[in-house]
Length: 261
Image 1 (cartoon, rainbow, N blue to C red):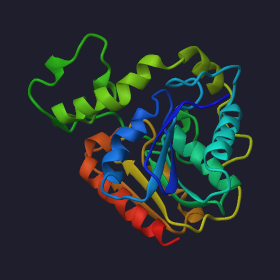
Image 2: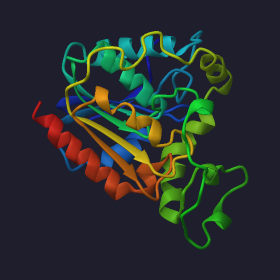
Image 3: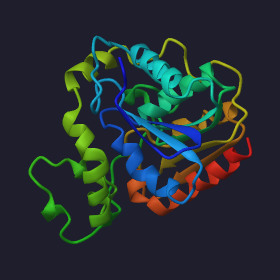
C-alpha cells in the first residue's frame, strides 16, 4: 500500500503524522506557514490508512498502520536523518517510531498528543469549555457542521482554519475501517519501551483539551530529557488554530534546537 501524500520544499526531511480521522491537511495547514519562514526542510504530509485519500485495505490494527508508515519512511526518506511531528494519534505513532528509530530521528514534536493513557476512558481530561467567541460565528455554521464540538475558541479565524484544515478530512474518513482498527488500537511495541530519547523534543498541549488533556503527557517527560513541555491556556484539541502565534513560535524554537543536531 502506498500512502497518499503531499510534499513541499527541499532539505532535511520533516515527516508529519496527523491525528485520528482528519487527513494531512490538519498538519500542512498549520505547519506550512511556519516553514514558509524557515527554509531548508522537505516537508512530507501523508494520509494515514483509512483517512484522506489512503485506503485502509485490510488493516485492522495500529500495528498495521505502523507497518505502512515504516514502508513510507523507507520509500520517501530511506536511511536519511529526519525530523518527526505528530498530532494526537499521530503523536502516539510518533512515540512508537522513536522507540524503533531513535538514532535516525533528529527531533520530535508532539501536538496535543495522546499521553500515557491510550484509551479516552482512561485519560485525565477537563470538561469542554468555551473561552472566546465572536458575534455571528455560530450563526454562520451550516447544518451538520461540528465545529463547536471541540472548539474552545469560536472565532471567525478559528472557524476558517477548521474548515480548511480539519473538516475536509473528517468528511472523507472511512469510519467503518477506523472502527475496526480501533478495536486493536495499542501498538505491540509500546512507546517509551526503549532508552530515553536524548534529542530536542517539544510537547505542546491545550489547557482546555477535552480529548487528550494535558496531565497525562507530563508522565512522559522522564523519557524525553530534552523536552519543552508547554500547556497553552485558551486552547483545546485544535490548539494550532486557536493559539496560532504561540504554536508557531514553539515550532520555530524546536526547529532551531533540532538544527544543531
